[in-house]
Image (cartoon, rainbow, N blue to C red; front, side):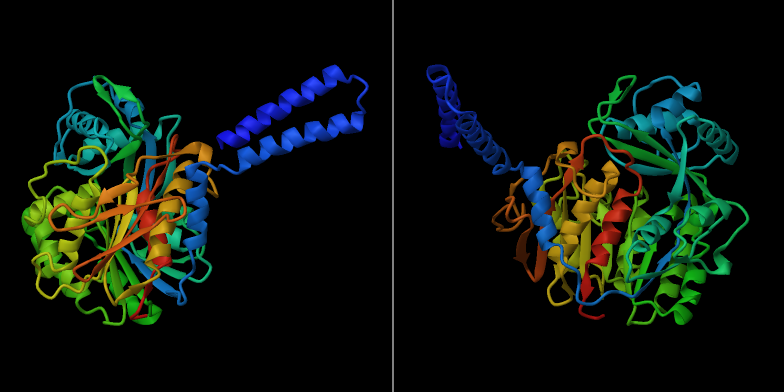
Amino acid sequence: MWARALCVGLLAVTVGLIHHLQPDISEAALEYLTSSLHSLSSRETTSSPSFEEALSAAWDQVITAPSRHWGKVAVGVNACVDVVVSGVSLLQALGLNPRSGGDHLVLTSPEELAATFVHYMQRGAAAERFYSDADSFQHISRTATQDPGAKHFVGGNAALIAQRLAGHPHTEILLCGPIGPKLHELLDERILVPPTSLQEQDEYHLILEYKAGEQWGSGRAPAANRFIFSHDLSNGAMTSLEVLLSNLEDFQPKLLVLSGLHMMEGLSQEQRTSRLHEAASALSDVPSDILIHLELASMTDGELMRGIIYQQVFPLISSLGLNEQELLFLTQSANGPHSALSAWSGVPDVGVVSDILSWILQGSGSEGSGLTRVHFHTLAYHIIATIDGFWENQVAAVAAGARVAGTQACASETIDPARVMLKSPLEFSTSQTETGYTARISAKEPVAVWKSGGVTFHFTPVLICKDPIRTVGLGDAISAEGLLFSESKAQ
């Protein structure tokens, strides 16, 4: 690089000197020398692409289509209309004053909303809460929809995943959930909705977004993210689960994507326990040739999480999708590896994450678990971990998930190197509890692969959008894209 720069400089001086000493030099000769200078300079520029450019190009090389597609995918059960608005703008419109943050597991007032919003904004972390007071929620909802910057989108993990899957030409999608007129209008026309899923009114969720560096009072966001809350009784009771399962025989999917278990936190403890038992019982009747992927979301009730892990849901699923907050809460609830960790400090340590993923796949204390794949996503990187012998094409799957994180956040068709940045470690230990090794990422090798105890890990960085257009639904898009490129040996 330095040698080429020196040559360019010397050639530039030479051209100027020749023109000065021999003013009668022909224009053709001078043009030739000048073009040589430009050519050499241009080669210097094009021969050294940025790491972001090189990584994006390397992803394109490793993202190969699976040899077998899913064909038909059934998705349910949480669906709603997302009202997306600036969090700070809404809190100001509600007449709330900046205050110190404090986490409330269930929101009962605008003041608790403000405190919990600040708590997570200061951490740049996503979170979701149930708002228990119906009248207060309606007032806040009306204020949000009147905000000049408010936008309406497809919402709910199931609907968002269905929307992403519907963009794939080889996939037919069935969506079951509480689908009102506005949501039905917003959904991709290729998504099949059974009449039994249609209802007269929509469920609304409020999405309070904030940008990196945005401040409200003493709270400043280190990264762009969002805070979600709702008073959603239909999704909370998972009323559409039986509708979803009753349509499987006629639709005959190869894959069932389930989400919405976290919405049950809005139920009473007794209702929650009963409904989870009913849901697990219904899922146990799903034919064994239909693989089940469960998409988790932000949760606060440890007993509900333990019920999902032990005997209830984990034994029935093959694949799991979750982020860093859900992963930490899962291991805390079940006293798994690193459960004493109260919160992530910056980018989650890859070795710690790998230890927890390995524990989840190797049983996590639940008997007869059928779980063979976990797709973990955090802002800086993604990992797909699989039990050997069950899944293929996971290098492509993890790279595709990371690529869509960058493109969707920036609302672009392809990765724009000027609009993204890297926060991922490019060298890291693969475990913090066992004898691991140091894995490395390079622009030529965008996916690191390693094995531990019958589990294979696939790691790739994320090119983070510097100024994201919309953060809602990124996790759902990531999991959906990963599934599209995944191939199960049971297919």
